[in-house]
Length: 132
Image (cartoon, rainbow, N blue to C red; front, side):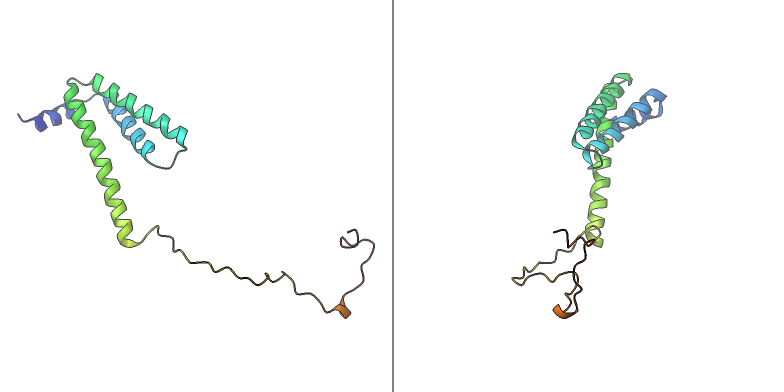
């Protein structure tokens, strides 16, 4: 039997614990790579992924087959990310158009136009402008 056949044979004979550890390793790897978590959370995800991967290899009947399976999982996640990135670049999704801003030397207009001097009412004692 070939090496790949042996790997698939060990894949069929996995226990629930091995499947759980492989799942935690893949999810931890994906969470550690992305920007969904803050930097401290990414470090925890990386640590959890490495710990789960080591546990997966330890629980496996042959650690070399477990290592090959983990390498395939990392390569699969990487190829998925590459396909999604290329598709989004091709479709133009996620691009933010940058418009140049021109700074004006003129003063900014006020929010409300000022009334002519003759039509302004005199300040009253209760007005906020009177207390200044």
